[in-house]
Length: 85
Image (cartoon, rainbow, N blue to C red; front, top):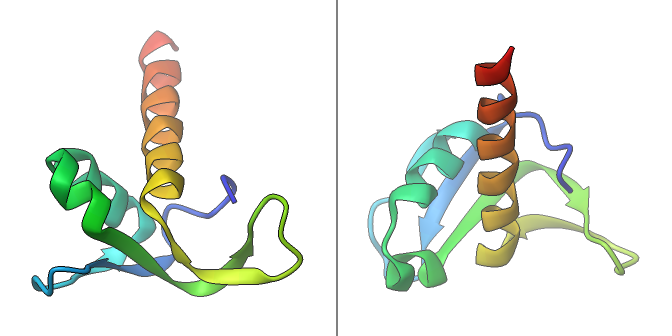
């Protein structure tokens, strides 16, 4: 799941019904990173291409908050790596 391309089209949705953010996975992850904990718990990313989840036989079109947080951490790690080089 962590190999999702940053430029893949995606939509950040909110179970509270706020306006979705339509853009790329990177756009969605960056917005998610700014959310307060309550908003993060309500957020999901709808993908345009399904990905495999660890421990499941089927692919998914929707990323849950814990999976989005893993992408946030991936992005932070990539930024730190780029800053050092």
